[in-house]
Image 1 (cartoon, helix red, strand yellow):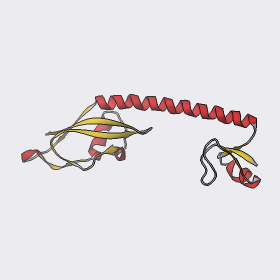
Image 2 (cartoon, rainbow, N blue to C red):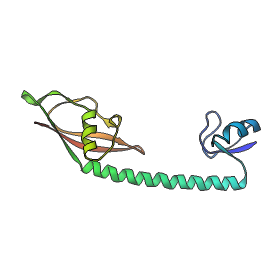
Image 3 (cartoon, one colour):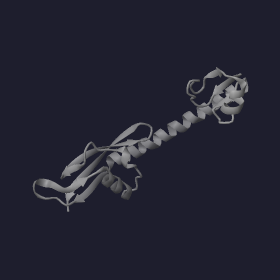
Image 4 (cartoon, rainbow, N blue to C red):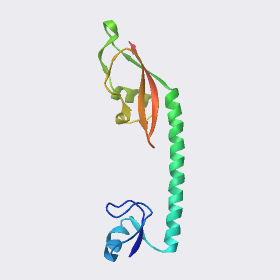
Length: 147
């Protein structure tokens, strides 16, 4: 039985491929799980339409993420901390602190998406990389200042 894969199926094929499978596997697993459509010219045209809509949605999301990137890069965050002599901090500024400051500014970014090689332990200005959806990266300026 021929089917059109709607999603990638391990050891079977990628999205959009037409593959030959056993009828029971198609009827009992692939089609009910929305992993495939039974092959016909009408279903092939339907799949192409679904694919076009998905591409449009993907482009729209990418444009939105690029707008967020521009706003983030224009943003300048200030984190006041206690510091001792030689501009050394009592503690450190971590991605959790940066996440909280971004949340106060109205941006919901997970701390795992804030790339910080090691915690900040000195006063100064830092450019911090933030990973956004659609594999887009933004640089946020963070000012670590003394209270």
